[in-house]
Length: 103
Image 1 (cartoon, rainbow, N blue to C red):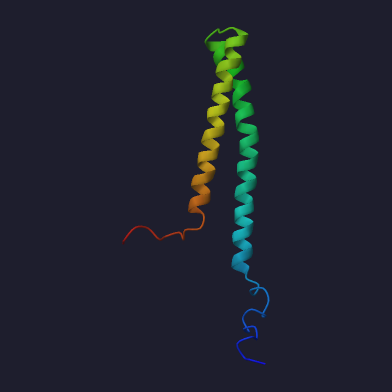
Image 2 (spheres, rainbow, N blue to C red):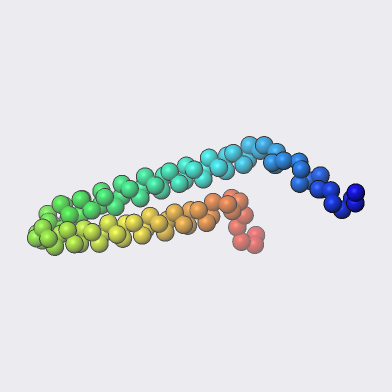
């Protein structure tokens, strides 16, 4: 049989060796995801009810139907802010700390 037909030794070696660094980066990524998931659920809902009751109906004396509309806008804006923060944190998570621009 020809030697070129055989598989290379690297291909048959199996998965990469276990590394503590890989595990810690995975745990860090999962913590970040969990934090932003909780924030995505609680912040818009909390802001919706708080702004409806205290800001729009309380301070501005708006009608109930108007306060629903404006509180929903605040909640949607909160969702966009949380998403933008998540993208920013996820984008910068892989970059080494201390590595800035040209020193």
